[in-house]
Length: 309
Image (cartoon, rainbow, N blue to C red; front, side, top):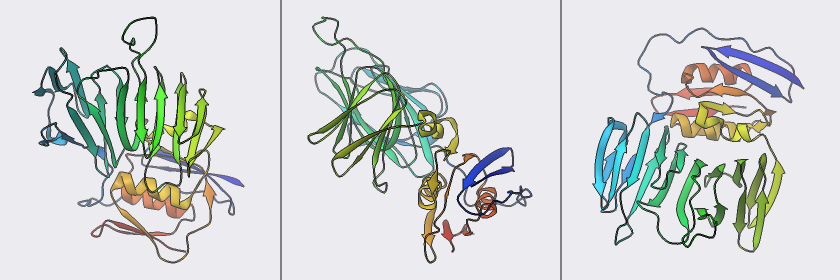
């Protein structure tokens, strides 16, 4: 095994490959032209309780709207904040959805913070009520839960529950990531701080910081992991430093750059690790892949990357 280092355009890639050792050389800057495929950014659509929608990419900072006793505002680019100013008679739900090539941060009515990755959605009430706080997730999100006292006192905390693909992640106050994309083989919950309980059918597992629960076919496997790698997307990186095969790498690229990935023949059998800036230009990203023995062809007009043998 060899360590391969590629530095292009201020970003870097560190690949540990199972193939022959090779030093990756940086490429020249792409010629000035209109780029059809660009890195993702702050994009999302908010669906209100009455089914009307708001394109959050076009929103500037300031107040957006009001639903019942809850005010919606944008404190800055890529952020949505809910502020409840009293209880409502009816429970109203909102849904925030990011497209491929988009991500967004939302501060829920209880003060909990959620970062949505690309091609994800979160459905939640505009004001939490009752004996638990429950949301519905598709795709991937990183959560920082604000502890809340349970009704009736007694020092108990109000549970926060993330429902995703039939799996329930229950917490009181903690930092964790849930990855629940439909095209991934496992649903993964990674814990950074606190503790969470992951349940699927009759199976359950309790996580400690630095652990990850992998759920597949109703079974739960708990492993040690580098929790920072699981949330690197939130900080602007693809992080494969724990090793990844070609399909895993290409799925993440597909979501962030909003491109389709097709395999011309067989899928290359390689495992490598590395770290790439999510701000990288698509042309430079292609050079990084090619330098590290992943042969690809970019078709910008068709928004497609072809992986060749």
